[in-house]
Length: 345
Image 1 (tube, one colour):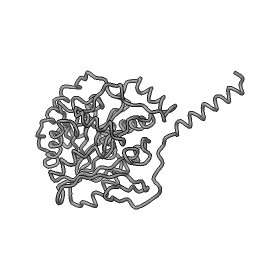
Image 2: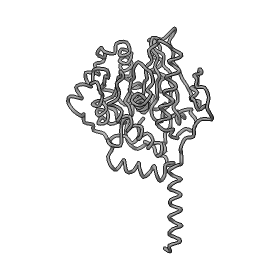
Image 3: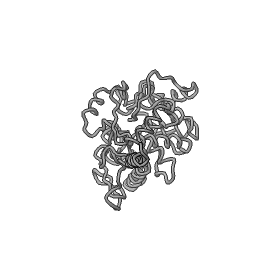
Image 4: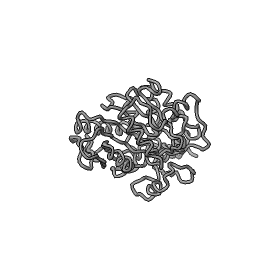
């Protein structure tokens, strides 16, 4: 190939590569505004409006939960848990994180810092709405990673504790090489390309009817952009790294049958907790639990443990799942017979 043609070819390749690297970035909101909560919206400081759902008890709540959903899901995931808690005097608020559910720019990755900023804003507004009422953060899978990064970074939200439900901590350091390589190449060459979890033969829950509902729900994302997956992976790495700085009271829940987030990084997170299991941070392991612990057929047991921990954070959990977690840590890493998923919920 002549030198001039070769140079032109390389220039075209470079331009395509740079375009791929910058494609799919989520723009900020329409402009600065006063952040606030309405009945059905969280208004962020940059003017972005995020759908807000709430499940409230009759009368004043004894505690308030700010709940963050998992990857590709949205705030409706907390409908059944929120109703259960509301019947027991606990208020639950959940919003669609940027890029998910009814939020603008659906399918694009907003960036870890932006997701954390939205959490700080929502927590601050709920503190102002419920002064003197205990406020807890609930993070489910990806939401758990956002909570972890927020609580272990600069300017953590002012809360009374955190509840991490199967937190997404599958960092690159915990992934096989071929998976890291495929993600790196795909995110730089075709970040707009979409992949799905179909054909992986994995199960997120034993609640089959709920899984079918999610499959029919147009707001639940079925196909994921590779660039978004890379953003999630960055977030998961930051969440795992932050475990040793999680000094706030925390309840960390995980199911033995989880096929989405592998056990190895979960145990790695537990071992990094600064105050030791059973002290400020309480791991809990459910023998029959899947990834969607709050929506499994056995979810009532998990929800009751959360409510009991809120009432008496130093007492043993009613289910005994905290004792099972201590045994798992003492015995070493549990073995799993299935391959991990390529997408976190």
